[in-house]
Length: 253
Image (cartoon, rainbow, N blue to C red; front, side, top):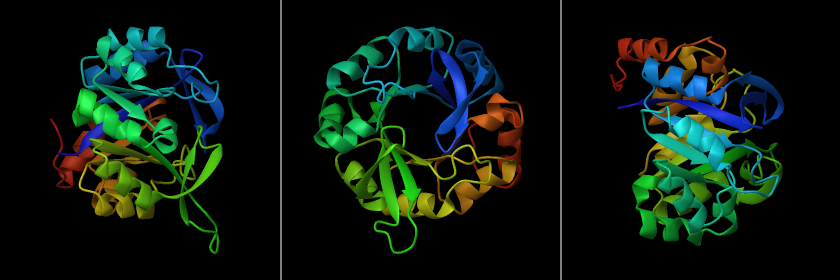
């Protein structure tokens, strides 16, 4: 079953959207967005406090709680989560899954510790990747701090390590494709999906219905995440589900 997941990138309590992780524009109110997506039949909702890590602060629980209170589907939160205590604070207010990214790269054992304490179903490891020009290794590189910092880690190798440490799923975002609406990074998505045994969500680049289909069929993704096309009403959740279903993709009705 392929999942359709809208993503709320949050800055100063508002949903924003940019291109390649920068030039952020105001999109909508997060509570109103969450209510709409639940009514439309989204399978999950992802909430990312995108400036938490850069601003060296924890996720704003007050922002999360407002959205959690109106959300009737599985709800994942990421941004500024650095410890088991941070995860517990979110799970205690009803968040279903926590997503870690930069913290996992800096301390991979946090993945194993979180799985042991909370169970793998509650942990998503987000991986942000970029393509380097030919001759620059690694060609597919992990970036952290909202894409601002290179790590030297190879995306597929890091995904395999994340899976081996027990993560329940991977949220894979292409920094190059983010917000461009030119399609997901199929090469990166497929490389990761084929290298691990856990679900991989494709993120970054959705611009039209065909892109969702390609991410699943060519990219082998278990779920597709999108932001701009949903926030600005270019594609609705029911449209996306209908399109995939008509093309033989098994979706959650």
